[in-house]
Length: 198
Ligand SMILES: Cc1cc2nc3c(=O)[nH]c(=O)nc-3n(C[C@H](O)[C@H](O)[C@H](O)COP(=O)(O)O)c2cc1C
Image (cartoon, rainbow, N blue to C red; front, side, top):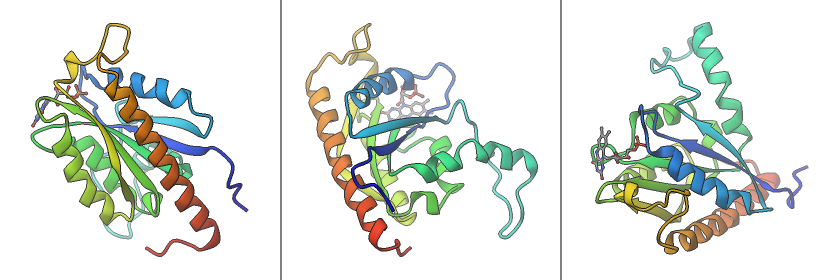
């Protein structure tokens, strides 16, 4: 029996695996927001630290031991999550291959769960990455939520301390987490009553 009052388990996927990446600045800021919530616990799945294999097996084929070991570090954590936040940069008008790879290695781990996006990049603030992620996540039976936070020219948006220069981003983060909580509870409660139909 699911405890409907238990904090939502949020898996935060950090999408960039690039050397010298900006991702930690955005992720640390998000971490501070998550730390203020008593209705959420966060598990940070940093794809740079838990690098997944890139060669998918043939249908029905067992995974080679090396791939199985790498997946075992990520898949159970996605399965345990009630909801997701993707921290994604924009690469060439879309989201990074590392994130697509993580999505493609999984399926039922995404089913019937809400996904929120925190994006960053150059002029578009990663919004094209988010636009591309929405139909991809729909295909794996996830529910992408409306509210987003995006940082255009991301490197100019943060103080040395890690705080954002424009408090509107903090307001947007709270709105994003509030909406993710609504969907997270709604879908977790629904699945406790009725199995998700994929
Ligand atoms: C391969 C590559 C492609 C990029 N393409 C875009 C782009 O299309 N639009 C954009 O706004 N920024 C683009 N950028 C800038 C990145 O969004 C920016 O450098 C961001 O910091 C990358 O995230 P990361 O540092 O965490 O890897 C690109 C960067 C890279 C490395």
